[in-house]
Image (cartoon, rainbow, N blue to C red):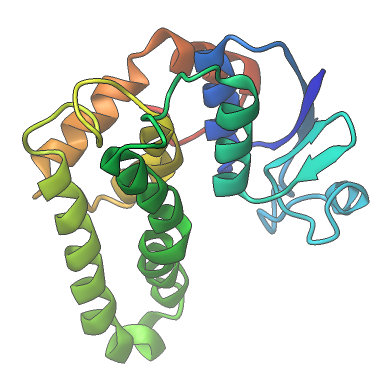
Length: 208
Protein backbone atom coordinates (compact mmCIF):
# COMPACT_ATOMS: atom_id res chain seq x y z
CA UNK A 1 0.00 0.00 0.00
CA UNK A 2 1.34 3.42 -0.97
CA UNK A 3 1.32 5.87 1.93
CA UNK A 4 1.25 9.62 1.31
CA UNK A 5 2.38 11.87 4.15
CA UNK A 6 0.20 14.82 3.24
CA UNK A 7 0.45 18.37 4.57
CA UNK A 8 -2.56 20.63 4.14
CA UNK A 9 -2.20 23.49 1.64
CA UNK A 10 0.96 22.05 0.16
CA UNK A 11 2.48 20.59 -2.97
CA UNK A 12 1.64 17.10 -1.74
CA UNK A 13 -1.90 17.69 -3.03
CA UNK A 14 -0.70 17.04 -6.57
CA UNK A 15 0.57 13.61 -5.49
CA UNK A 16 -2.92 12.71 -4.28
CA UNK A 17 -4.27 13.90 -7.62
CA UNK A 18 -1.77 11.73 -9.51
CA UNK A 19 -2.77 8.67 -7.49
CA UNK A 20 -6.42 9.37 -8.25
CA UNK A 21 -5.67 9.68 -11.98
CA UNK A 22 -3.85 6.34 -11.86
CA UNK A 23 -6.66 4.79 -9.78
CA UNK A 24 -4.11 3.34 -7.36
CA UNK A 25 -4.97 2.36 -3.80
CA UNK A 26 -3.26 4.54 -1.20
CA UNK A 27 -3.42 5.70 2.38
CA UNK A 28 -3.14 9.30 3.55
CA UNK A 29 -1.41 10.32 6.75
CA UNK A 30 -2.55 13.87 7.43
CA UNK A 31 -0.45 16.66 8.90
CA UNK A 32 -1.66 20.19 9.68
CA UNK A 33 0.30 23.41 9.43
CA UNK A 34 0.78 25.48 12.56
CA UNK A 35 -2.00 28.12 12.43
CA UNK A 36 0.38 30.87 13.61
CA UNK A 37 3.58 30.12 11.72
CA UNK A 38 2.10 28.19 8.76
CA UNK A 39 4.98 25.73 9.16
CA UNK A 40 4.72 21.95 8.99
CA UNK A 41 4.49 20.14 12.33
CA UNK A 42 7.64 18.53 13.75
CA UNK A 43 6.04 15.09 13.37
CA UNK A 44 6.91 15.15 9.66
CA UNK A 45 10.61 14.93 10.56
CA UNK A 46 10.05 11.38 11.74
CA UNK A 47 9.58 10.33 8.11
CA UNK A 48 11.49 13.13 6.32
CA UNK A 49 14.41 14.74 8.19
CA UNK A 50 13.73 17.97 6.30
CA UNK A 51 10.24 18.13 7.78
CA UNK A 52 8.65 18.75 4.38
CA UNK A 53 5.83 17.23 2.35
CA UNK A 54 5.16 15.40 0.06
CA UNK A 55 6.62 12.13 1.20
CA UNK A 56 5.53 8.74 -0.05
CA UNK A 57 6.28 5.27 1.25
CA UNK A 58 5.91 2.35 -1.12
CA UNK A 59 7.11 -0.73 0.71
CA UNK A 60 10.78 -0.09 1.52
CA UNK A 61 10.97 2.96 -0.76
CA UNK A 62 10.69 6.47 0.68
CA UNK A 63 10.70 9.47 -1.68
CA UNK A 64 10.58 13.15 -0.71
CA UNK A 65 10.78 15.21 -3.93
CA UNK A 66 7.66 15.91 -5.97
CA UNK A 67 9.28 15.39 -9.36
CA UNK A 68 10.89 12.14 -8.26
CA UNK A 69 7.59 10.96 -6.78
CA UNK A 70 5.67 11.74 -9.97
CA UNK A 71 8.27 9.93 -12.05
CA UNK A 72 8.39 6.94 -9.69
CA UNK A 73 4.63 6.44 -9.46
CA UNK A 74 4.09 6.68 -13.21
CA UNK A 75 7.13 4.56 -14.07
CA UNK A 76 6.46 1.87 -11.48
CA UNK A 77 2.67 1.84 -11.38
CA UNK A 78 1.39 3.70 -14.45
CA UNK A 79 1.52 0.89 -17.01
CA UNK A 80 2.25 3.41 -19.73
CA UNK A 81 -0.31 5.95 -18.58
CA UNK A 82 0.30 9.69 -18.10
CA UNK A 83 3.64 9.81 -19.89
CA UNK A 84 4.82 9.66 -23.51
CA UNK A 85 6.69 6.74 -24.99
CA UNK A 86 10.26 6.97 -23.61
CA UNK A 87 11.61 6.40 -27.13
CA UNK A 88 10.11 9.66 -28.41
CA UNK A 89 11.26 13.28 -28.32
CA UNK A 90 8.03 14.15 -26.53
CA UNK A 91 9.27 12.12 -23.57
CA UNK A 92 12.30 14.40 -23.30
CA UNK A 93 9.95 17.40 -23.23
CA UNK A 94 7.93 15.65 -20.53
CA UNK A 95 11.02 15.11 -18.36
CA UNK A 96 12.00 18.74 -18.85
CA UNK A 97 8.63 19.91 -17.45
CA UNK A 98 9.08 17.62 -14.44
CA UNK A 99 12.32 19.43 -13.61
CA UNK A 100 11.18 22.89 -14.68
CA UNK A 101 8.49 23.10 -12.00
CA UNK A 102 10.82 23.15 -9.01
CA UNK A 103 14.14 23.83 -10.73
CA UNK A 104 13.09 27.10 -12.39
CA UNK A 105 9.48 28.22 -12.06
CA UNK A 106 9.00 27.97 -8.31
CA UNK A 107 11.91 30.24 -7.35
CA UNK A 108 10.54 33.63 -8.50
CA UNK A 109 7.13 32.75 -7.04
CA UNK A 110 8.64 32.08 -3.63
CA UNK A 111 10.85 35.17 -3.86
CA UNK A 112 7.80 37.28 -4.65
CA UNK A 113 6.00 35.89 -1.61
CA UNK A 114 8.86 36.31 0.86
CA UNK A 115 10.25 39.61 -0.43
CA UNK A 116 6.73 41.03 -0.44
CA UNK A 117 6.62 40.51 3.31
CA UNK A 118 9.60 42.86 3.72
CA UNK A 119 7.58 45.90 2.70
CA UNK A 120 9.74 48.89 1.79
CA UNK A 121 12.94 46.94 2.43
CA UNK A 122 12.10 44.54 -0.37
CA UNK A 123 11.15 47.09 -3.03
CA UNK A 124 14.59 47.25 -4.72
CA UNK A 125 14.26 43.54 -5.57
CA UNK A 126 10.73 43.70 -6.95
CA UNK A 127 11.53 44.77 -10.55
CA UNK A 128 13.88 41.83 -11.05
CA UNK A 129 11.44 39.40 -9.46
CA UNK A 130 8.57 40.69 -11.61
CA UNK A 131 10.73 40.39 -14.71
CA UNK A 132 11.50 36.75 -13.91
CA UNK A 133 7.84 36.02 -13.17
CA UNK A 134 6.82 37.46 -16.53
CA UNK A 135 9.54 35.38 -18.20
CA UNK A 136 8.47 32.06 -16.69
CA UNK A 137 4.71 32.62 -16.75
CA UNK A 138 4.99 33.83 -20.34
CA UNK A 139 6.89 30.66 -21.24
CA UNK A 140 4.11 28.55 -19.73
CA UNK A 141 1.43 30.64 -21.44
CA UNK A 142 3.08 30.08 -24.81
CA UNK A 143 3.17 26.33 -24.22
CA UNK A 144 -0.56 26.29 -23.50
CA UNK A 145 -1.81 28.56 -26.29
CA UNK A 146 -2.47 25.84 -28.85
CA UNK A 147 -3.14 22.71 -26.79
CA UNK A 148 -5.25 21.97 -23.71
CA UNK A 149 -2.35 20.33 -21.86
CA UNK A 150 1.40 20.80 -21.84
CA UNK A 151 2.17 17.89 -24.17
CA UNK A 152 -0.92 18.11 -26.37
CA UNK A 153 -4.47 16.86 -26.21
CA UNK A 154 -4.00 14.48 -23.28
CA UNK A 155 -3.04 15.21 -19.69
CA UNK A 156 0.26 13.83 -18.41
CA UNK A 157 2.41 13.80 -15.30
CA UNK A 158 3.93 17.03 -16.59
CA UNK A 159 0.62 18.84 -16.03
CA UNK A 160 0.29 17.35 -12.56
CA UNK A 161 3.82 18.36 -11.58
CA UNK A 162 3.37 21.87 -13.03
CA UNK A 163 -0.11 22.35 -11.57
CA UNK A 164 1.06 23.92 -8.32
CA UNK A 165 2.98 26.59 -10.25
CA UNK A 166 -0.21 27.74 -11.92
CA UNK A 167 -2.33 27.46 -8.80
CA UNK A 168 0.16 29.36 -6.66
CA UNK A 169 0.49 32.13 -9.25
CA UNK A 170 -3.29 32.37 -9.46
CA UNK A 171 -3.60 32.63 -5.68
CA UNK A 172 -1.24 35.61 -5.80
CA UNK A 173 -3.32 37.39 -8.46
CA UNK A 174 -0.66 37.02 -11.17
CA UNK A 175 -2.66 35.54 -14.04
CA UNK A 176 -4.63 38.48 -15.41
CA UNK A 177 -2.50 38.55 -18.57
CA UNK A 178 -2.30 34.78 -19.04
CA UNK A 179 -5.63 33.44 -20.35
CA UNK A 180 -4.16 30.17 -21.61
CA UNK A 181 -2.65 29.44 -18.23
CA UNK A 182 -5.90 30.33 -16.47
CA UNK A 183 -7.92 28.09 -18.79
CA UNK A 184 -5.49 25.21 -18.18
CA UNK A 185 -6.03 25.53 -14.42
CA UNK A 186 -9.81 25.56 -14.85
CA UNK A 187 -9.54 22.53 -17.12
CA UNK A 188 -7.51 20.32 -14.81
CA UNK A 189 -9.35 21.41 -11.66
CA UNK A 190 -12.59 20.19 -13.25
CA UNK A 191 -11.26 16.66 -13.69
CA UNK A 192 -13.01 14.06 -11.50
CA UNK A 193 -9.68 12.73 -10.21
CA UNK A 194 -8.62 16.22 -9.13
CA UNK A 195 -11.92 16.83 -7.35
CA UNK A 196 -11.70 13.46 -5.60
CA UNK A 197 -8.13 14.20 -4.47
CA UNK A 198 -9.17 17.52 -2.94
CA UNK A 199 -12.07 15.86 -1.13
CA UNK A 200 -9.74 13.25 0.35
CA UNK A 201 -6.85 15.60 1.05
CA UNK A 202 -8.79 18.20 2.96
CA UNK A 203 -7.91 21.86 3.32
CA UNK A 204 -6.39 23.12 0.06
CA UNK A 205 -6.74 26.84 -0.51
CA UNK A 206 -5.39 26.71 -4.07
CA UNK A 207 -8.42 24.84 -5.44
CA UNK A 208 -10.90 27.17 -7.12
